[in-house]
Length: 124
Image (cartoon, rainbow, N blue to C red; front, side):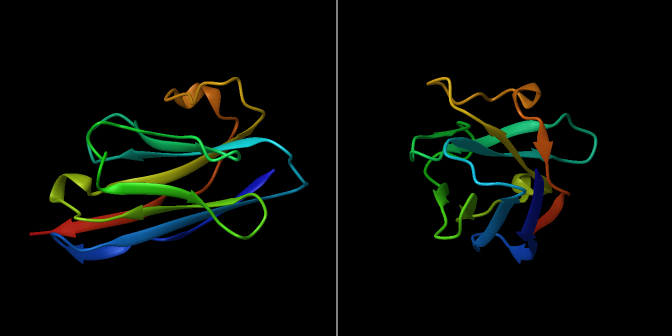
């Protein structure tokens, strides 16, 4: 499985950005796609996740501002980030794994496949 991440960039406070991620290498009937982020000097943290059946989960820090949805492309999802704040500045990673236990994990160890980081910078 390979992940191709896209999106990101530099924006002002209150602006929006969209990150996308596509998993290739097969046809997967059930999968979970998640996003994590890591700010300079901080640990990687969970942002949100989606199951291919549309269940989502978000970190409290992004609830109401970020939305994850499946894309029309196979094995793809997007992270729509609205009302961005300076504290959202980080390197964002998409992560992916197969199957679904009924719970969307916020633990990085749950995901075997990772995309390259995409930098998001929010300036005030």
